[in-house]
Image (cartoon, rainbow, N blue to C red; front, top):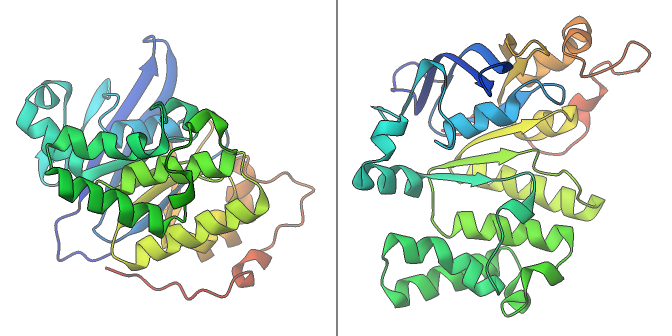
Length: 271
């Protein structure tokens, strides 16, 4: 994290409750720097997904403030079409449940949806679609209906529909949930490559090896929805007491930092 540059995202004192009585986030402050790969780590139900939705401008905090790209993001600001279009073009969100995201009759139409909303030229849209389908190896699925696809194929289509917009910031909610081992490995590799290519990535997970593989910084959210800790993956994973408090391991597990040598990638901060 470099202190010489303005953070890409700044959340201060973010709190949110569903129906004004079920707390989801309690006084969370965070900064995300350009080119960073940040893991939001916590047990199910701690508020990770809600925090991602605030960063994506899909829900708005009850208390606290959120700034992205140097400007405040609020419900009022996003009613301004020009601001909203600019913000949405720069932020891509990949939902945990692809059925909430993939809804067009064919894969090609699904990937075209975002660029069409941006008002790009038809030949530019076609070029982008072809590029992203080649990159994600889904060209053969172009005319298929999304409901005919496997979970792994659907995830690729959902990611394609985000990457085709070429956003600066990518948000992933539990990225490998429900995927088979080969699809999981492919997606973790892709996220690592996107990070290397300079994308800023924030992802929510309760799986320790994911954040160790991809992230260069972690925020740990407690089950009471507050910020428990933040630091580099090596420190977080080595702190057994912290992981127990966050309900990320149980007291009989043998977790002891063995994950730290489980992959061939160098880490280093790219950005």
